Image 1 (spheres, rainbow, N blue to C red):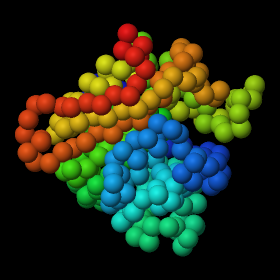
Image 2 (cartoon, rainbow, N blue to C red):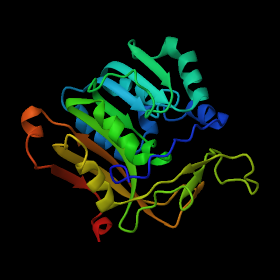
Image 3 (cartoon, rainbow, N blue to C red):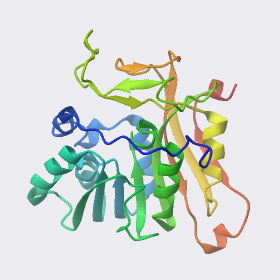
Length: 266
């Protein structure tokens, strides 16, 4: 396994128009984001309220950049998404994008070679790494773009039970209309990756260079109506992985701050 995640097969290039249609009007305002995400974003922004240079992996139509600009200073925003139609929508709206210095790239983060290594203060993968095939490889690639003294922020589905890393055992229909129709012909499937909490922390703590700190905030919830998985409840968590400064990277101690349900660890 790649870094404790799934075997790095070629990621799925989703083609459904429903992705771009949904993200045209959803996940574009601060209040559209989950409580776990907002808690983590406020924490990493700190008293300076400054996000610096941002890389958004799985950006859809760039809604995170719009939402961040409501509350924080964003010096630069680069959005990457594997869905061509979502990037097309983002580019069509580019003239009104609130971050003046911005860029949108269509492609698989594992195949893109034009981004600057350690070029971003904050790298985000919200509902992305656990919604495609090469989860471990995506996380590893995101980490290499984080500057020292910067953060990698991701969302994961967590459980005290076994990890579900394969499309054949846990998946979600790419459908945004509530319950999935009885006839699912033509509806794409995405992996609905679930991590055992220990597997998730092992994956993140073994990133290279080792992180200096891992912060997490999450709570129990039920899987999406469009998901087909063995679990009837999961912890939906946002995590911030801090790369640290040179003096912090030289040690073997990783500090942690976990605001997670106690029974997740049982």
